[in-house]
Image (cartoon, rainbow, N blue to C red; front, side, top):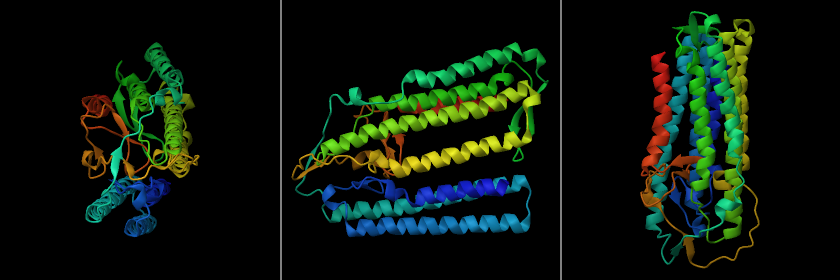
Length: 368
């Protein structure tokens, strides 16, 4: 079943990466800002199609090769898992490399064709934007965190009844294959990691309140509606994942306290179900919402402003993927390639948001 799991993940990654250009705003192509007047540029449209065809073809070839190798060579479960991770990273690296080629071509065409010539850049600001946001209330995200804290307290209450060796890793079959000696720290390591992840998803939802809205001056009402909806759906997605990982990791932890509820079948199917549901929800999110809500239908009754375009901030996007603008107070910004959010790496707090959870999770794992 390991080959099915990793094959499914590889297929999802391939399809999502290949069709990413279809989910983007018309005013952005491969990390480059494109004025509305050139959104249908034939060369750019051709580059998008070439990217989709190349990544999809390459990914499917890798997938078929992996499945054929796994079914004919009969490797061990561990070898299958290692190879599965390797082909996933290979597909990602190749697609990113091809993305950079497309990024440079679009950037060069923008310069040679002088797309911004004769245009005035304007920034549209809605002073009541935060008041209009309809994100999931903070308290809803705090509830799973309270559950996790309760789980930690319960663990200490049951400490003397727990086995001397605590499972810390489960193999592809769902059976524990790595253990750590029981200590007051090791018994709560999993809930602590869960708590860090819960705080992280709460931070994503809350961070959207303080991220500047990128409103298109050529159609302000439509752009504003899409921005608001985009953030609402992103908040819902963060809550869904929070609840999912709480249920999954909560069960993992409880079965170390009560071995009688442990089942290899559940230990295998639970993460698989979570993975499939998460991929399905993310896929629906990408198809329905798109980048910055660009796939959401909204009224287009704003008056078009002749010769006015949004601020061209290409200079702050390194390779179209990494945003670095010390003059922008936003910690989180909308991605230029992909659906979702990234960090403003010129803001010191962004590094705290990025590194602190990573250090905590890695540190807890190492101590075990």
